[in-house]
Image (cartoon, rainbow, N blue to C red; front, top):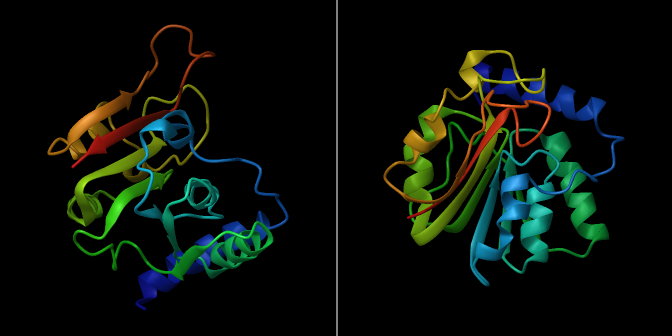
Length: 196
């Protein structure tokens, strides 16, 4: 691992240690829970940069062969414990997904939630099997609240998520920005479901 990788791992380990007493009650990301009816019945799924793995738990309960990767061994350790308690088969891996993204044609479903590294977009598209689906949800620049990062490198510009996956068939896209009553609706994030 490079010094930069170690710095990222240490940063996220510190984050997850401070959150380690939090029960996994958040549930899956909204894009996954609202559109779970379009998930395949069988196949391999990846929760990329999974954190504590609420998306992975949801995918495993759906019956998919589920993999969960994160740079934080603290987060992965908590997910392993949760999977054992819930008697779920989740293949976990401590993995820097930026320097080591998924291989080509390896997953039927990829879920990315509140993680953004534009450099791996092409790798994610290639990692989908034919007809595979990507469920993506993360923070945008046009936020009406203080949620999420402040660094613009980790915030989507208007319609950027849509453009990142323009080679795929878009099945769902939602980004409300700052229109209308910003106290209501789906704010501060964009979501996409797209098919290869």
